[in-house]
Image 1 (cartoon, rainbow, N blue to C red):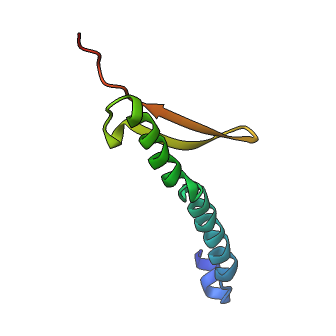
Image 2 (cartoon, rainbow, N blue to C red):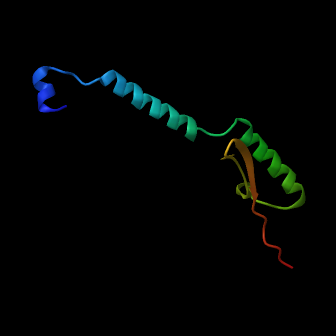
Image 3 (cartoon, one colour):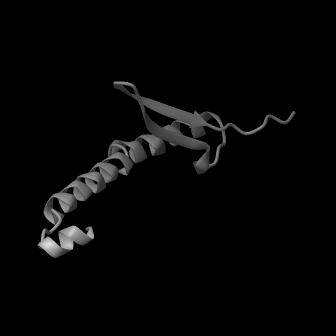
Length: 85
């Protein structure tokens, strides 16, 4: 608010400013929110299947949903233990 605005009694549009800030906050929350509800269950089930064949830690399986242009891509990473003879 400048000196001239103060003298004329002109108030800034606080409602529109607050509305825009709220839109930004909501958009940010939507983008940072976790993936779909099924990802933790999918991770546990993958871990169970992998453990039938290889002894791995629970942290060895990572499941993420990545946005690639217009598509969602399921990114699965499994860290296998070193093979020792």
